[in-house]
Image (cartoon, rainbow, N blue to C red; front, side, top):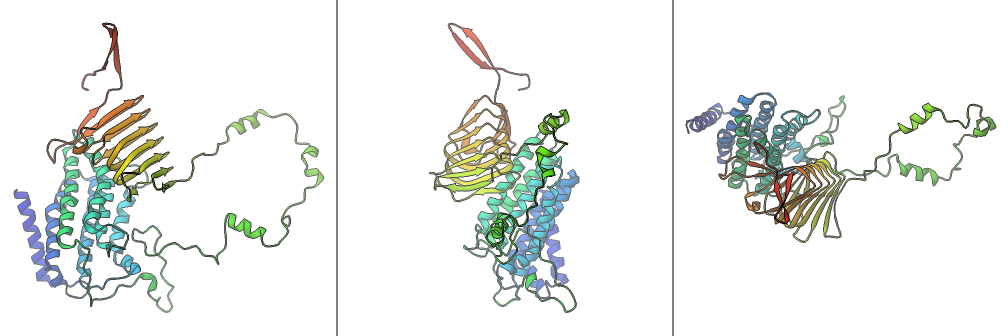
Length: 470
């Protein structure tokens, strides 16, 4: 209680200092904007929730502290953007990308921390990085902009981060309470923190100024005489302003170049070399009918071609979602689905799929290190021929079956505790259920994979093998 009171007093002092300083934002009305109720409420959000995340991260240190500092930086950038919105006219798509560039740069820095060699704190880094996409609610410009409304966007963004946040709660339940406290504080920062803030002040998106300054994209600015034009922005931006277009006048590559050469009217054999008699195999002295041992070994050691097909994420015949051969994709999402459709996931590796809405059936087949998060399923969720998969049910599921699978983590919600779980020819099956209290720890239960069969009274009685500490 005293700690929260101190945090609120510190936030109030910071606001008073900002008001007394009289500093402007972009040279126009910064002090007035800082006293706006929505900006004051954003400071309260940071003081109440963000400061708690930062305090716990300071106790942990290392990469957790580094990624938490990026969260602080992202929230600071968002505050500046909210102030600037009040003095800026609503931009077009290219202008919006330029306006949100500071936020995109921070998110890019956070994403870079999750790349390369896998860290011991990978779950913390992913939870923090994925959560930052919730701040993109400020990019909402209307129902035709291609994204969910601000409140829904914050909730949906956290669902992706929660997948890794729950893994932190399980991993550090008995190892380090600081990591558990950090994970809980991170969730509260977005739910209810940021969600309730957006709901109270920007439920329909940011309110732009009708008479403020205009935002122009970097590509539309004329270069200074005598200086070269600035390089184009990187293609991996979170807020891309231009769609990729194929140029018909450019040089063709691949099979297009082949067909262009054939249809050009030139002789097909114009570029071929003439084979002389001494080049023919039957006349070459270095060629014999005996195959050397080294040649045999070289052939057997040659690599074989991969039979993995192209990646797919598509709706077939309006009834079946197919997700195939996705490798290293952490942000796969199926949005427009209904209770008559099924989802089939095949051959995916090191990826995460989120299924939003209710579907009839989900099948996960021949996947490795695959994570699937879904809301509700009408019939069943099936895991077949997989290795090291994680499945999280956020709603209800009558049946979950696991067949011929090694390593499977099942996360159940309170609405799915009555789910019937069937296993066959599988090992290392763990089921995690929420605690009795809303902020309680998750309980982990391992399903038996060994059984004792005893012939008694004319029939066999089967009981699971019990181990000490199980």
